Length: 258
Image 1 (cartoon, rainbow, N blue to C red):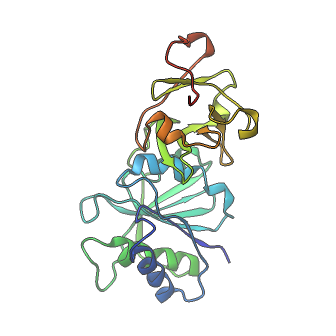
Image 2 (image 1 turned 90 degrees about the vertical axis):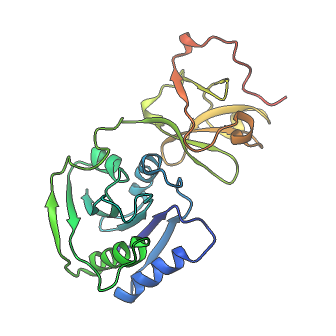
């Protein structure tokens, strides 16, 4: 039984994730639910799109991703389902699924036409998206209509995003750039520093800042036994820049504390 995977910007406190899970179970009591992210970039579908795309391969085909980063809830954005390489993504058409579709070998986009008997103006995650995700996981039909596959909001965006898309609890700075697209000679400019590549934390000295390809394939800026976010003064949405080693000016400050 493939899981329903939650990806939201609701935060780790408050009732919202629990309410979404309850809505899933009301439709599909036997559902297997995994809460992947409750702290996706707040109000930022673009950053969230690059973060989400890095994690989908961990989940088997048939998995249903219930995704709510929806600052335009109640507005004109469409409620959609994207089927991409055998996985399903339920949520708003606001750019959140654009990277998933761009990188998929095969995808279909459908607008959700089904409506519940009662739907809040401000909590479509609970009232619309959660029941639809549960229906998909259960194999139960719901009303929808097919959309053009390239009509997704944000589909014409960049392949990689030179911005911060997540800061973890250690202060490591995750970017929207895939490590496989970079060479080891690439230097990143961030927070007024030139940051060079290292393979792992143990490759550098305590307090040294470096970049590496993290376990989900994204470029991550880190400080050994420290916080890169604090050291570089970076948060979600801040820009970084990749340059070749020959373009480095060497005068922006050493990427090391102290």
